[in-house]
Length: 293
Image 1: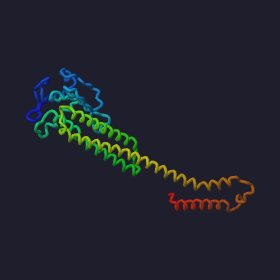
Image 2: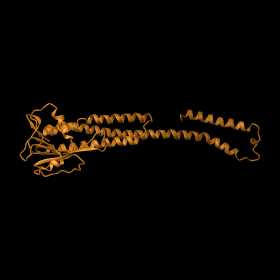
Image 3: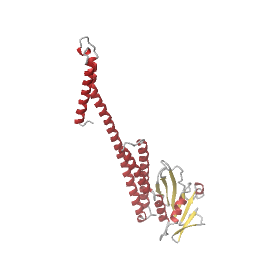
Image 4: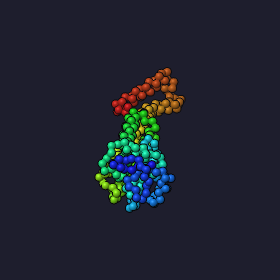
């Protein structure tokens, strides 16, 4: 599909892309792209990052955009800035949807291909801040569960969220690198992208803060685990301390020597029972005073 910029508006066009075309926006599939041999093809279906390269006669690049809520899923777009034309290679029919959002907005004065490219990037990141805030809310809920000792499957949840945050952090870093190259080129004006760069920087900072938040939650979870283990060990210590003298007495009288007077004493058994009870009570009083429990 081909559009053109006319009277500061984006409209559908019946023109054909040629070496002398201007102000055209071409959204092509891979097959359609092969019909335009006048640009050296840099197309490769295996895109793994965002980049842009300046070839003097034209600029080309890739957008490797993470899909929200779908971990490890991306959609990719190839783009060419050639002779005041913007060529977009999209096999997933995503660009048409993005372009429609731009068309429906109010027209701008002195509109051109570079401003359109800027607007496409703006539309792509439009919902990113809200998405990062949702991730922060999930982390906050997870933190409450940790404090309430209800964080089941914590490691699985935190690792998944952490990877998602890192994925977006690297994405923003790549976009910023693209902007540096684009601004240094002859086709872009720095003030057009200044606001976009600020937004990307804020998103990157937000992702970095969330990454640090996940690390804090991991430390908090480990601390809670250690505290629970300490409580268990404290109980085991108390039980062991109480039963140690009882075990000693039991072992002592378990020797059954012939001339042990308590063995034949009528009140021997109840007396030992009373001694055991006194030892337990005394130990508990001591532990209470020492604030062991």
